[in-house]
Length: 460
Ligand SMILES: *Cc1c(COP(=O)(O)O)cnc(C)c1O
Image (tube, helix red, strand yellow):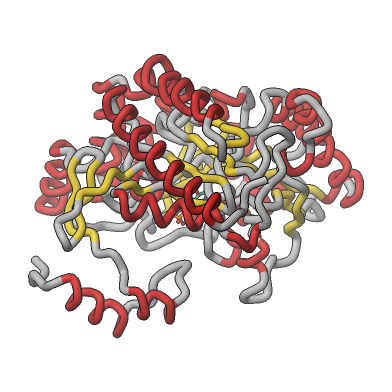
């Protein structure tokens, strides 16, 4: 185990050696990081002993909450029995085989095969190579282009960040890589306020068709999207959007890829977000919730349309990772999925705590700062606006979202700010009483933020 140190000692050692992901290294060194030392249920504890309600499930992944003994036992037993063996060269391990079969059971019926990776980013790299390989084998090698969306998040490897539509990421490292293009996101507030949400859903889906026609339908390999954009700010598309996307992909024979890294394993009230949003993908990326984050694991569910071609005509697929099908990660995933089943968590989200979260968020519309709310299962967002009557936003450089996030931090609530969208994605095991507790904290932080905005004269 690690040595016990004071917070100041941890921070000094951290700043001296640890380059954190998505972090301004200098400002972290100046302010010091918050060191999380333990967790139980939905609560974190930091090195000062403060308890913090984790409304982000770690990083969208701890679906079953912290401290689940079944997952600890599964890992411990597998570590003793067989800590590692690979799945290259015609070998396999029991947990990887069992998990592949269980995934085929809980995913939609078109999925019977899985390709394992170590993370969501690696899963999406696999998607890029696999869809291009599929079209080669289909005798259409000119189908190379993958269409994605602005403000999508698909990971941070070269292909993952290229598929993603984050301009700040593209600006570093010469991205996107060739053959990846983007259309606008289905964000009603920015692009559709003059339309009803349903009308806007059709309009936003037609941007895909426009892009297909611009690129040339015979050159497009696939379209990829998150059923509900997570890191982009919990952007829930209108109900008309995904079914129309499906029709457009079908019309042009284009593969449809659902990035379920956040929306998988019960987050939206169905096993997968595509079921909630009403579409039928050919490929599905997963990670995060597959192990509830207890160990790293990701992969791609491969629908029969693609799997049959790869299996029957593909020969060797020259792709894979040392940790594809890691036995300990797979053992934890098995325990995690069985726990989701035995606790009935998908139904809990769909019928009980998800609707309750939606009801409590809807009520936030009464708050002077809240211009809109969006929810889907255990994902929710509220938008801070300057003028509720017409939805006028605050000037971005005020950074009101970050002001609000600062209050959350001090009040013991992990809530994320994406611009002026304040978002949560709490553990699925939350009870209604837990939601009440979280909402009390959210109210308090909104009131503190309102007081700041008034003091600075930022309100309309
Ligand atoms: C987190 C995330 C990824 C990347 O997963 P990593 O495990 O961080 O590589 C990909 N897609 C979506 C939708 C995500 O939220």
